[in-house]
Length: 413
Image (cartoon, rainbow, N blue to C red; front, side, top):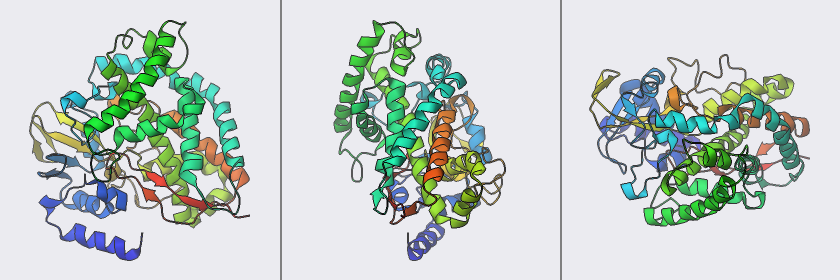
């Protein structure tokens, strides 16, 4: 992004009347222009009411401690109304355990927990490493290619197919369904109507129903479909709830890791001193992974619905209001994080970020995401001291998934 574009966005963010700021606008995210708007809200109106938007009225929670207050209080701030700023009509909703409150949430989450238990992660480590090596060894040298397609999507989608025991030859369907589930409707999105989106997700349901039918009649296995099919908490789900939980697991296992893989390479190129620091000391990789996840914040927000009147940051939020926790803003809050706009791979307490959420809905796969990033950078650094970004990233049109469509890169000979 040019300096002039950044300056224009800052001028607009500072001049627009406060009550007209709508940080939920997906165009801000596709253009990469959202930072000055969040900076102003944190400074002037950290609990901000937007009365008019494409998503209806909503409250924005933009500072770290206020976000924590909402995220850890599921008794007042419920997930039942949905987890994104977008409200879907009842007939298009697909319930899943992250959009449930206890006790049902706890029972269903417990069903899939074994897939990311420490013992299973230890077993997966060799597989992740062998795949990362194969992907990196296949990359062309001295030739421009798309890092998102060749590396970010490939590694995460292979892993996701393994977790589901999904046919590897069809694994790119998982990427497509993940994008289909999270894209806004209308201009800039993948579909013009909710009907069109649901029709595509029906293909996802049909595919996985065949896998379910195979596994529900077999001995319990260690894959996610088998776990869902054999657990008392999930084996009697209806089609919509099954689809909802599939989409949750696909998006959680795909979008977050793939966009952090892309963001990491972009940030190292934007901060060559940090790239050199990494080359000088590869032992910083584990800490760098946490800093990448903070700096990227692959899911920009999570939404809650107020079950009762509540006060946050001195503002009264009425029962029934839509409350959006902007993790991407909280991760840049200088009251909690020192020099938050600087990418620092040796940052002290780098895991002190909001990207995985907090409370009962904290990301179930956070350790797996960190493991994939760690292994990829260990193996990339052994092979390629430098991977150059040679063009602008193409960003996703979404204020929920903070991600990339493409990133042109080149490995020097």
